[in-house]
Structures are given as structure tokens and as C-alpha cells.
Length: 313
Length: 313
Image (cartoon, rainbow over all chains, first blue to last red; front, side, top):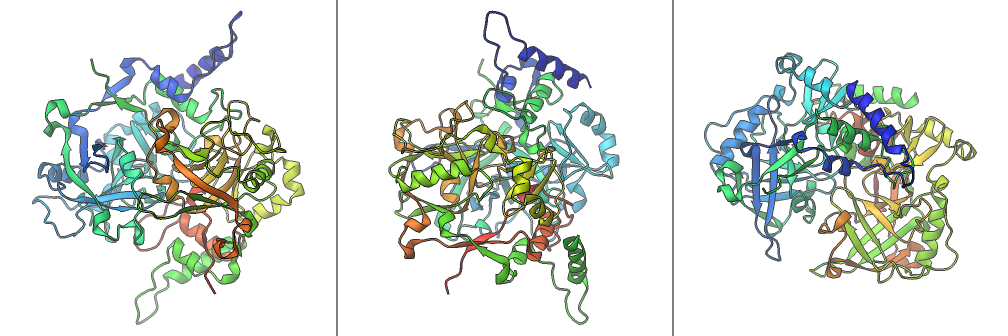
């Protein structure tokens, strides 16, 4: 309620003309985020960043993709496996093997024969959601109330931007949502076959039908264009038919394993901040000068949480 | 209602085991479309196809993008302009100038100085929607009732797949929806500045906030990957900063202007067919073997109308 009132007050202040001057244009969502005070931004711990370096492109330019790993209580069985795989340098020398238009780019061991490190968990399908009890234990309900108000969509009884896009079902369970840039765990037909060694990133319209059917373990915070602009595979499901089409992965590391000078640093706009509430309202009702008709709402994937590099001091 | 009952009957038939045999797996949406009878497919008139040939890629492969133009009653002012621009060969020698990740690829005259052909209409912003009266005159209400039932989303009071994704507002007006692959008319700040000479295609999550703010004039039915996999521009809004990055457009023609042997032929699944109703239900409730939990709904852009080349006889 506090946010709603604040929004009303702000909207009024934006349209009041200043006598003797042009009325200030209403800011765009990006301008609202850029104007947020430093205290509204939360630095992502380097231990939660997964850094994927691809072989350089044809012109020799480096290609780095940075992924923020999903925090508790979501998908933690797979997150544990991913940390072990990175620590074992298991992905080094593997490749991007599948790029399907308007869907996913997927990477891992193209031979499907590379031995996995010891000690990976077999994660049961129950972990695709967090139960009502689990959510309550995590005080998630309180966090969800703090989120900017959102109109429900066909995929969830309610939803929240709680650092990450989260759906909630009728039974109170919570799940992470497949938006553009989401990173998930590939699997075979059996729900417990996904170890975390085979990962994909969403490069098209949000495939929300995958929610609760497959694990979301992170989101790309930088370098998604190195995946989304790759040539599409011409085989079934977008797999590359010729091994030479695959893009090699030089290494994947948790950022804390990299030399300090090479560690990327990112921060995101707190979804509990007033700045975020204004940003989310502006994403749902564009009133900046280009727009004629505010939409009156947005699906949760059209309100991406702003993420940016931490400015050098 | 007919569709709903039919769906229930079909769903039951899919899960009934055949004694002495494995139960047949429930078909995927793609399998349902592929199994639709020939009579459920509607051939797109060549006069409604816009064929954009780009300069060949680095390996010499041709790159063709085929766009279906939006039928009446939508966006017809701009469609008329686009036909005139194609007839004048106006786009030949222009280029793709902007590729913004998770948003659009845009093409036209990079200099913004090329003279337009005479006789282009200035289309008023009112044409971004079809009024209730216009919709009634076109018998759209009847067509919308025939569409597969869809759960509304935050962007429209109701919506329909009526050959194309269409939203409807509280006042009864209709508008075409910006889904992946939608083609729209770039414009400047003033709503009537878009002639149709500057076009874009959506290559990311559906930017539904553009609905009713900008004209949708078609959809890419083939070759979207030649746009979506282009390198992203590094300038503001994804514009290429260096002219050498632009991808040249060899020609844009309405298909009827091409030699018969070179005319592409496509057909789409009738959205009034029982096959489409089953397809739409399956897109909303995936029950094919990979899936554990059907979503129970889908946003309209996750139910793309199936389009395929017409098979050679």
C-alpha cells in the first residue's frame, strides 16, 4: 500500500507543469533505475557468480557470460552440484551444442560420456518447487507481500519479484520462473536425470510451460548476446549437426576462483526498494514520451530486475 | 463450448490404455499440428507475402526472410504504404541497422534521407486499434468466439487467436499483439510519423507494452533466424555504430512480383479448426512424456499459430 500511494504521489508530481518552463518528461523505467540511490543496489556476492568463458569469436574478441546462481530456498540440490562441477573444472573443453531459435542455447559434454565428478546429488522432482511449509520457514510470504503489486497471469495464482521472478500456486508452493536469460538444468525424460552438468539459457519468449517441470538455477546477468546471437543449429531441437559448429567453452568458474582482478562485480536493484516499485509501475504503464497508451499491466518477465556492473571506484 | 467438450473427449482417449500394448503417448503440440488434415491448413496468398532477401552470409549462403502481411481490418493504412514501397523497390540497397538483444531487429534507410515514393499515406494513431464499430462491421466478434478459449493476461480484457494473436479492450476495440516474430512500423515520437519504410521484427520476449502504441503489420513466417542471430549493435538502442556492421538488403518484394519458381508458398493451421483447438489446449497443458505438471494456461504469445511451407506436389 505504501508503494501504491507513493506511486500516485510521484505520478502527480511528474505531470504538474513548472510555470515558465517545459514540464519535465516522465522518466522511462531505465531512467528510474539509473536514478535510484546507491543504497537501493545490492552487490551480488562473487561466490554466487558463475563465469563462463567461451573461445574468442572469429575476430578474436573474448566472449564472457556471467550467471548469477539462484539463492536459497530454490533449486539448492542442483546448485550444490553446479558448484562441484565448476570446482572440478568439469566444463573446461566442453561446448555449446544446441541453439534453438526463440527457445534455448544449451551447453555441456557433447559426447554425453564424460565422467561426472564423484558426490553429485540425485535431485528429486519435488525440488522444482518450494512447498508451502518450506516457503513459510523461509519467511517468503512476507517477502512476497513486499514485492511490487503485479497482476496475475495464466501461469500462477500470484507472483512476485522477490529479487527473482517467482510464481506461487494455489497450494502456496513457490517456484522460480523461466524468463529471458534464465538458466536451467537440462534433463532426459525422467525428472531426476538432470545433474546440472547440462545447462541451458533462455534466448526467446519466456517458456513458462517449463516452470515446475525443470530446474531454474540462475540468470545471465552479462553476455547473453554471446549465446542469443549464435547461429541456430539445423538438427532436431536446434542441435548442431556438425561438430565444427559447436562453440568451445574455455572454462566455467565460480568467480571467487578467478584472480581478484578478473572477478566480475555486479549489483541488482533491490526489489523491496521504492525505486523498484516506481520502476515496476513504469514497466507496467509506460508514460515516457514515446508512448500513447499505458498497458495497464505486464507479465512478470517484462519486468526484468535491473542488474549492472559495479562502478569502479 | 464445442471445443472444450471435444478436448475433454480427446484427452480421455489419449490416456486410455490399450490392453496388451503400451498406452500411446500423448502427442505434443507439434505432433498435433503435423497430424492435422490437409483441409485444416489455409494457404497464404502470395500477394500477402513480403520476401526480404539479405546479402549472403560469410559462407555465401543465401538469407531469405518471408513475412506474412496483416490482413484487414488491421493496420491497412501502413500495409498500403508497404505495398507501394515494395513496388517501388525502395528497400533495395538499404540495410538492417539495429539489432537490440531481447527486443528487435530493424531495417530501412540508414541515412534517413532517401526520398520516399509519392502517394504514401500519413496514418493516424487511431489505426493502432480497430474500434468496436469497425470490429462489429467485420464480424470480428463472431470470429473471436470461435477461437480456442484463452485465459486473459495483464495486457487485454480478452484475447483470441483469430488467424493472428489479437487483444480486445474493455471498450470492445481490437488490436494485433506483439509476439515473437511480429513485424512492426518504426516511428519517431509523434504517433503519425511511421510511414512503413522503417520496419522491425521482434526477436525477444513479447514487448506487449508496444501494443496500441505502434503498428503491427505482419509476422515472419520463415527465416527469423537470419535476424535473431545477427550480432547485437553496440550503440544506443542496439544500432550498429560502424556502417560495415550493417547487413545489406538485396531486395524486398511482394511474392507475386517474383518469378513463379522463386515464389515461396506457406500455409497456416486454421485457428477455427478442431486441430487448432487441440493444439492450443496442448500448448496450455503439456501432457506429452517430458512434462510433469501442465501449466493450466498460456500467454497468447506461447501459442504461436503453426505455419509451414506448402509441400511440393
